[in-house]
Length: 298
Image (cartoon, rainbow, N blue to C red; front, side, top):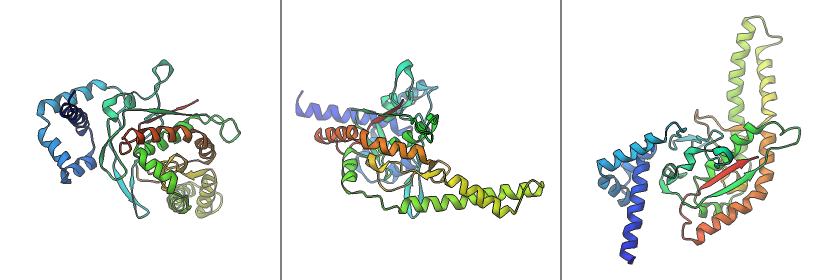
C-alpha cells in the first residue's frame, strides 16, 4: 500500500472508531467536543453521516444486556478536578474460564476511545495486558473477594485513563506526600459523623440509646475509620498520582485497609508487567494512547 493509501486507511479507521464512541459519551465529553476548536473534533462532527451514527447506535443496542458504564464526569474536591470513577468490581475484569469477566470491556467498540484525566477524548491502544492479583489468606484479608475485586477494578479504571508515557513519567516523578490521604479521611469522617449523629438522635428519640448522641456518633466514627483507608485510584505503585478516587455520589473512595495494604504489596510485583507493557507501547509509537489493562483476582 502506498504511503498516501496507508494514511487514508488509518484516518478512516480512526474516524469510524471515534464516531461509534461519540454517540455514547456523556454530557461532559460531549460539551468538551462542542467547545473545542480542535480541527479533528470539528471535522469528525461535521463529516460523520447520519446513517453511520444510526449504525453505531444499532451496534450499541445489539450489545445488550451487558452492563453499560457512563462516560467520565468530573467533580471538584479538595481544590482539584477529579474524574468520577465508575468501576464497580467488574468493569475491567479479563474474560476467563466459562466466559466470565467483563463483556463490556471485551467489546473493542466500548474501549477504543476513552476520556483521560483532563476530560479529553483519547484513542486507546488496541494491545492489551492482564494483571493478576491474589485474594488474601491472612486474618484481615481472608474471605474478602468482593473487596479485592472492587478495589482492583477501580485502581485499573484509573490506570486506563492514563497513557503509557504518563505512567512511566509518574513512576519517575510522583511521590506520596500524605496530604491527599489526610484530607480525604478528614472530610469522610466529618460526613460520617453527621450521618451517625442523625442515627443517634433517632435512637435517642426511641429510648434506645445509652449515653449522649454525640458520644455514640464519635464511637461509631472511630470504629469505622479504624478499618478504612482512602483509596488511590490509580495506585501510586501502578503509575498513578497522589490523588484519592471519587465515587459516583461525589464522596471520597474509601475501602478496607487490610485489602488495600495487601494490594499495595502485590503492586510491587505486578507493576513489572505493567512497566513492560507501557515501555512496549512507548517504543511502538503509542505512548500517547490510553492504556488498555485488564485484571484477574484469584
